[in-house]
Image (cartoon, rainbow, N blue to C red; front, top):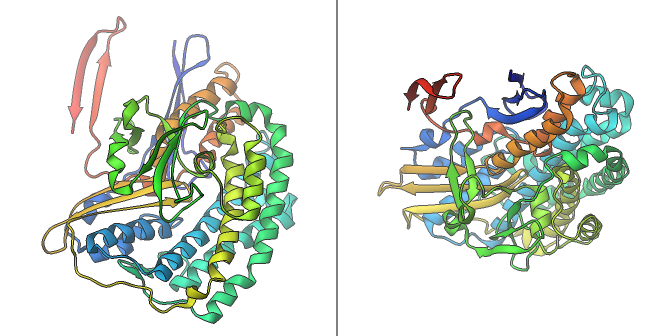
Length: 474
C-alpha cells in the first residue's frame, strides 16, 4: 500500500514550503512534490497604483533581495518613460545590485548551506545550523557574517538603509555617489576578497567528500538560461537572453528582454502556489530549464574579471559540457561573489562614477514596460502595463525561484529515490531531500504572488481507478 512522507516545513530556506514523497509498494519513492504553501498576491496589489510607486512597492516583496526587485521594477518603469538612464546612474544601480549579490550569496553559503558540508549531512539537526558552525569553526563563521555585512553596507551607503532602500527610481537613481562613500566601500574590499577566496578553497577541498550528493542532487540534463552582456560576459544588470543545453550548446541567443514571452511560457499546478515557467519551444513540462549562479556560469563565455575568470576556467574543467549537478550551485555562488567584488572595484575606480547626472526625468511615453535583471537566485522579470493616467492595469512577475520550480521538483524526486528508504527512515535522508532544495537558495516570499483562491480540483478515485466524485474550485 502506498505511503506518503511529508517534510513540513522545509528549513533553512527563505519562506515556507513542504515536500511530499509518495512511496510505492516496494518502499521506494515513486513520486515527489515540492509545495510552496504561501500566497502573496503582489501582482494584484499593484493594479491601480501609480507606476512611479512600483519600484518601492515591489521592493517590499522580499527582505532578502529587495534590490533585485528595485532594479527590475525601475527598468520596467524606464521603459514606460522611454528614457535612456545616464551611464553613471546605470552603473550605480549595478553597484547596489552587486552589493546585494554579495550579501545574499554569503547568507546562502555561510548561514544556510555550509552547516551541511562542514558539520555533515547526518550530524545532529539540533546543532546543524549557523550556531553549530560558529561553535566548531568560529573564525570562518565570523568571516562569513562580516562578508554578508559588507554587501549590506554597500546597499546602505548608496540607498540610506540596508533593507528596502528607495534610492533606485524610474530614470536612474536619486543621489550621486560622494568621494567619502566611494572610499568607504573600497576600504572593505580586501577583507571581503580574502574571505571569498578562503571559502572557495575550502569548498573545493570539501566537495569531493560528497560524491553521492554530487551525483544525485538534481544532477540531470536540462537547459540553462540567463542574460549575458554584449561580449557574452557575465552580466547581472543588463543584457539579452541566452539559453544553452546540457552540452553547453547555445539553443537561443540575443533574445531582447522585451521578447521574453517568445521563449518563456508560464504554467500552474493545483498543488502549489509557485507557478512553473518553461522554455516555450519545448512546451510544458518538457521545457525544464535552470537559472541562477550555476546557469549563469554555464551560459556565459567569460566572467570578465581576472580572478573570477580563473575560477571559471577551473570550474569548467570538471565537465566537457554544462556543469549539471545542482550541488555546484554552491561553487558557482562563491565564484559570483568573487566576480561581484572585482566588478565593484572596477566600477568605483572609474572617474565617471562620481558624475552628478544620475537620473533622466520624463512623463510616461509608452503604455508597456519590461524590466529584466539577474537577481542572486536567477533571472527576474517585471512586466507592467499602464493606462493614460499612469496607473498600473496589469503586472506580471516571473521570479528566479519560479524559473527553477520544475528543476527543484525533479531534483527532489532524484535525491529522494537515491536516499529515502521507506522501510528504514533516518533524519539524514530527509535532510538531503531538503538540502537539494537549498542548492537553489529558493526565495519563496518573492515567488508567490497569485491572488484569490488557488484553483483546485479534488478527485475521489475508486480502487479500480474510476472516478467516484470530483469538486472544482476557481
